[in-house]
Image (cartoon, rainbow, N blue to C red; front, side):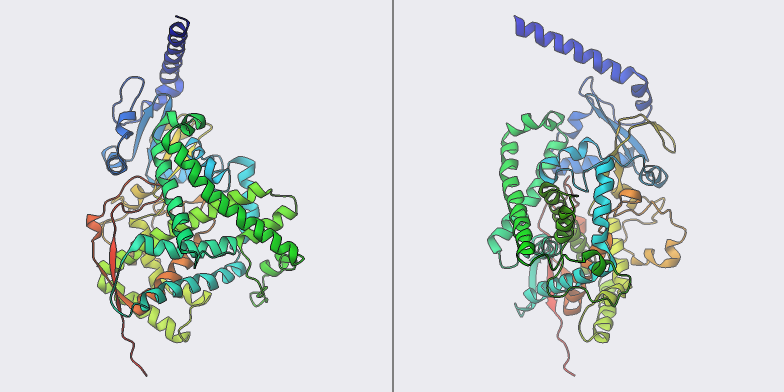
Length: 512
């Protein structure tokens, strides 16, 4: 009897709160925005409780149906999706709307509150600490690693001495994971075959679990999620991911202790010098982890803080870059004329540099860069970001009430025919200087924009060039499957659900 009365009381209180939220000032403002009709109490939740593939279809259909803004709601959660560049500019250019909100809270068990997920003063502090990581002189050291990993990837195909067919995603991600582990942690997974596969699968599986949990509000409560089979699976995956990171941090700290900290000494002076001819420490390559260890010695970070940032960089720098490379190669394979132009540019640069790639030669690959940018337009690795506003926001056509989850639709704006004529066509010339001039600056945001833009975007472009250039120099690429047949599903990054294979045909070099 008591339990029945208690449940009845809870239901009455909830219904009263629900009516207040939806019929109060914020609710009335919110419901002026167009969107699909919902059911009482549960709103649009049934629209979202679908397979990843079906959910993806919903998420790409609704933005066109309710252009350029629409709403969804479930229980007391208000969600707005925007895609017009004017609205995106209002959100992204302001320092007032930098909080990520509950969408990213689900990532806290994995990434903690590192640069991706932190807010307020903590985010400002972390951004300040990490900005020197991508200084020009330190990037030069990273380029050596990126070029080396690109050569390793090409060599693995050349060793076959024949036409090779590869399922692109696992093939590319193996090498981008090696690259980010060495640049972020100073440790390569190369040669750690079984563990490397386990580690890569763990990262991908965490993305799938995130999406599953995201659209089920009751699973946002950690103790409830921990009791579910997927919650228990996440716990085991986190043991792998955190265990590896903590082991590397401990080993790296011990290394610096045993060497008397000689490679950290004068870090700021040596690395940040304006003179580009400055000799940087060559005996031991510096990694992002070294900068974080130095910050910890100055009392700015704990070991947990370091782990948060290393996990964040490993996830963001591996998966997103991998998919950027995959889609660029797929598009080049389907557009032989453009592929030939890229090869001509790469061959010329290679000849001028005696077969070597450097920071400068990568920067000189301007046509390849335009191809990568166009690939990221059509298939942005990060196809959405989210914000939550602490106050009302006046957008172009509507007011967004405070404490709304705002979905910034990067894929939608990148394929908007109002800003990109024939948006489905792959055309690298869209990024010629004359064609960029009058384009809305927020119609192309593959690395976000404004104060919370991607800190590693220069690094990402250099890595994509370093991986793609030697492949195109040594192989013709031809499609086995076509992008028009691509199956996709909701995920943390834009990736195919089905294997997507390319054929690598060796180029016979003429002996001179």
